[in-house]
Amino acid sequence: MNEITNKMRKIAGEILQKGEASVVIGWEKGTFWYLSPPAFIDKVEDVDRLVWDDFCHNNLSKYLVDFKYKEEKVAIFVKGCDSRAFNRLLQDKQIEREKVILIGIPCPGLKDQDQAKTLGKEGDIPKAEKCLECKYPNPLVYDYYLGEKEELDEVAATKEAPNYSDVEAIEAMSPDERYEFWTKQYDRCIRCYACRNVCPACNCRECVFDQTCVGWIGKANNSSENQFFALTRAMHVAGRCIECGECERACPMDIPIMLLNKKIIKDINELFGEYDAGIDVDSKLPLGHFDKSDPEEFM
Image (tube, rainbow, N blue to C red; front, side, top):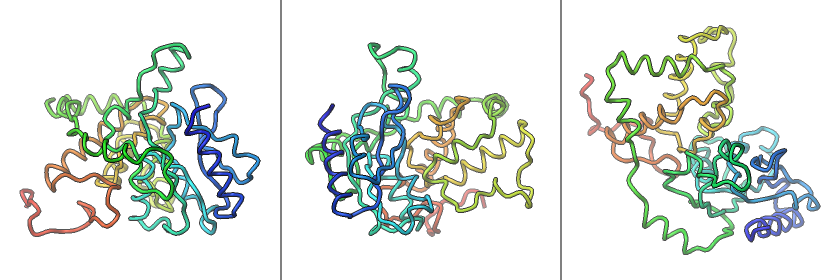
């Protein structure tokens, strides 16, 4: 058992024992050794279920939107991406800061679950794709921190420029080639909505794609409907995506969803200046306000 797991169980037990929160949201071991799904702990005797390992992928802030906990105080463990998601939910006014206790965990980068399944416990399991370019591995906001504070400044000082080589490869294609590429990707889509359901930026109380009377999207699973869904969702999270990569990880059809998200992030940075969603709660969204200096080539 690692040190962080011990600290998690200790602080969760104390919070529940004192009645500071009615539930603690963390991770526990799943059916397989390479799975560590979310755990909802509301009894002190259950804190030993909590773990911290290489497979604690789920962004826990998403679960704060759940109506079940709206009237209760909740404690959650947050990695860097979870904390960015928390800030996004605050900006969207989906949660109230005083009702949540944040317990920060330093994240060294998690392992690829699919590779773990293939290589086994003794294999040299690579990092998850979404962790390779993570700019904020440690929590940006917290009430308790389970690591060494020096780590926060060290990571901030070594932050590298984003790598958009994969996006640039798509941009270099002709329009017909790009259309063929994305058509092949979304022809595989089964519209299970896993990407939407796991995304912290997808937090509308009623999703347009769940409405049956307005006719925004048909029930048929075909190329045009799938592409409409993908583009609508991508634009919905434009300027709000916190790059946690959960959409792509949750996709059962291995569609490169983050490639589309990164393209939009790249464009926003070029048009409006560098912007990382979920960093500053008080910052204005690049697509949420108007500035006289905004480029207007389209007019």
